[in-house]
Length: 211
Length: 211
DNA sequence: GTCTATAGCGCGATAGAC
DNA sequence: GTCTATCGCGCTATAGAC
Image (cartoon, rainbow over all chains, first blue to last red; front, side, top):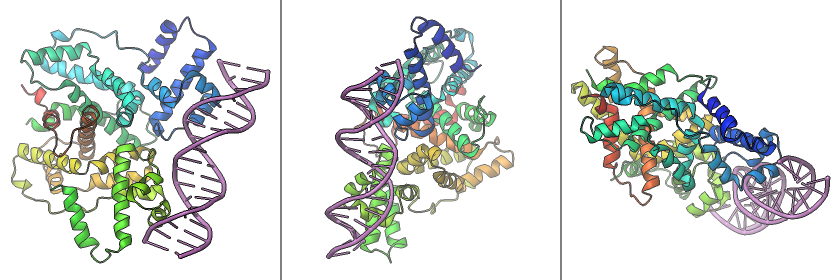
């Protein structure tokens, strides 16, 4: 089961159980379809008419739920559920294992939320409103992040700008995924492709530099 | 002097010395301004009217030089001059020095041609015509690329999908540059920012993984 | 809460004069 | 080679009925 599906279920069961009105369902459907279209076509190239048609409602209905196209864009990149349920055994790991687990967790999160991350990374330069969301995502420290920072502080690991480092890893990962999608359009991305995982880990671990 | 400026001069002096007509100059200006707008605003969000206004000609004139907006897009990502003048002393370097020189060369090329690379990386998924250009760029092997591949073949270096590796590095670099541009919009990017260079090299060399 | 109808504008692209 | 003028369409967003 995909993480996104888990999120959807949890959202339905917990957050919205008391507002499962017809309107709320429609609003959720609009967000889901708009996110998919923004992800695949880009924000500027997607029309409100196209979104409305795909959802199966009129454009007017869409504008009852969102003030404008920009409000809809902001809604699509909002995580449906904040990070939690995160394990916290990281302090027991060796530096190498910690870095491995940190990388694994990062690319897993990005992979299962490709649409959100892709939209944020590609539209942020042109829509300052999105940037806040962007930095909010990246500055939300996971337990693994905190453990890394602690060890950097203690001098057990080389110091690095963690946000810039994350931006680099995510940018690298998204670029490879996009590359693959272009040359193998039929590919069904259920799991992270092995060659991409291998190349990314080779990059992060500096495999080429260690002989 | 910027690489792009060198390119412009060389192009003027060699390729176009016999067609320095008024029309050719206009066409070149259109490409330069369109590239800048596509780079900063995206293809879909840039109108032909805006380009024409910035160049100082009418839209009709623009359509005399290019069949359509898409033809103009293709022209903007075309390198003004193919790679050459490349040194070829790479075979004398150690593995580590070769990798360092290869990385340095890659990020220098990308940095001085940010608009082209940014446009290709961000618009390729939605414009298959661009993909050909994209792969043509990446498959154009430099001497450093060839030396890397040779050593991988000989088993002197771990084998990697070099194109995917390049896509990852470029994606990482562009993402960091974009990030910086968002949070320091006034920054004048004459040279590669030190923190980005440092973070990128840390990533590629796997600094964190080597204690 | 959703619909039909439409306002008002900007888009890509072209015709035809000079 | 460049202009002015314009076509026809699709866009975001809204008014008003049900």
